Image (cartoon, rainbow over the protein chains, first blue to last red):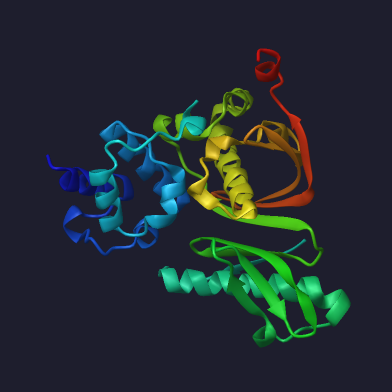
Length: 85
Length: 210
């Protein structure tokens, strides 16, 4: 499965949104019921792609397309070691 | 600190946003009553800084008023503080069952041990309160989820509403208020004093080992 399809599948499952309704320009804040759902999405993405998200980068992630782009380009992203120590 | 809770009938993001701002304005009016009397709601301007942290401004007062807003449909919580030198954070959440993945990700070992002492049926509310305190602290700091919630250790504050919170290992004096809005909704307000940070590390062993 391609990264885009995996991201959308995880979003659909975590946020309870039908996959076919998830669009690149959809805003995460509008799709997630609350911050806990957003946090769960974040850690499930980390787990699925076996990499840690730099939490500073979250400021630049607003839409579904931002998440897909982040996952696709962050293969060598350094870990947020302090958070996971 | 003053607080206000509003209900909104619509669940759209815009409706929740408006309910949140209405709650914040109500809290600001209450906070200003002793000094400025009843300020008209339309005179209260809410503006956000570059990080998205809101403040309120009113005519006749140069200094901004610290505010924080949170919502969990159908409720919106607003808090305000006119004293200078404090940081405010509010959070309201629906009590829910957390997945082990989420619990492992946001709880510190000390928090986990404390909540494990609760009766099983009380743990979902205790986990939710712990999350809410962390999120309120992160909002008070103006960073939100840009800082990992596990960097905030609430273990001391979980036992008492006035205690210490460790932020990346640095202890900070905090005042915390918790409400059960309904059986399934927890609301938290946190006040951090900007000058309260104690630069004594909580974990001296790492220095002893160096």
